Length: 162
Length: 171
Image 1 (cartoon, rainbow over the protein chains, first blue to last red):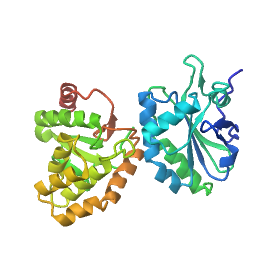
Image 2: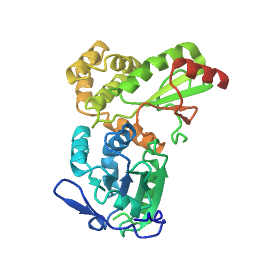
Image 3: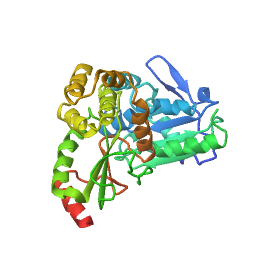
């Protein structure tokens, strides 16, 4: 399957349906009506990813203040996600882009075919499903959350958060 | 990456705010890497003397470190009687004993009264800790320890020799 380009700011974010647990799926469309932070990360259990998701987990009250939902996506399977989330006390959904592997990451232009993982990429999507900010981080760098908060601020200033 | 809130009188500092070098740490009292940084920074402070001002802001990752937030509360409670740095040191020197009972014992040893201990246990300093945390996130802090040197993010080696060599060059 050919990889697509990164969706541009102003374009609709490609919809998807991915397992959020061994038994349930989650779609992007069902999150419509509030800003969504999509976090593509290479792998459960890797040191940088662990730090990154720990930070976002700590920031859940802040994302709540913006009315935003945060969702992680990697190519790990749902049972792997479940074990990782339990180990790190994660309280936001981790979606499994597992079969076909990396399909959603490819549609967002952030699949790293050489390593067989997603890249480390962030998307902020507004309440209408439009990409408002995106950032692809060097794979070894935890991008933190300052860019996400600036993007959510910009949405709030335009009255797009709720 | 630059620091969005400069180090100032509202911060916990060791040294003069107008020192030529200001090192700021965003730290978590239960984080083992911060424990390593604690000893490293002490050595750097010893070598640099008054040319270095060291500041500490809270960045507890409570889901990963269940005692970090409470420990930060106790550091703030100690600050109200001018004993922040003593508590900071005690916490880093006892990272394996940060349960409520241990924290209360350290507090009593430092002269905090029962009301202050209750206040720390009750989360009365959470506002300050959250402000530090939020400010850190805004400045790109993505884990601990996270250092800023004269307002710029420092991700280089933390061994005292490297830091001291670099700081001497900055003088």
